[in-house]
Image (tube, rainbow, N blue to C red):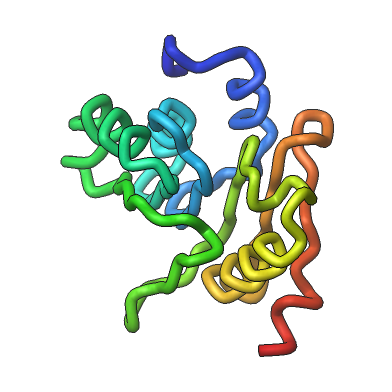
Length: 148
């Protein structure tokens, strides 16, 4: 485990149903500690970690040389409510968001747009987990999947 990972984030990573070969989207990655840890649990899978903060993404990239060069991890500066996938982007099997303002209920319009974008980025069986359960809770995306 990443020695910079808090006990809370370690619990979250342990609780995620991670499997070899999975594609994961981390929303609000901050300095990237959890993304690096998740990348170690994916075998030949892949994690894209995004954050709206340029500074956070710079820190994340600076601390992730090994994982980025392996092709298992990349970072992108973008807010989830503004994220649009590349035309031929593969979908993700799972999304994880910890302490993400766009999903905390304070901004209903941003939250709705964010959930629509997440639903578009995930496979049909893809799951979204956020903090706030014990230690995670799954957010159902059915209502966002079917009404484009």
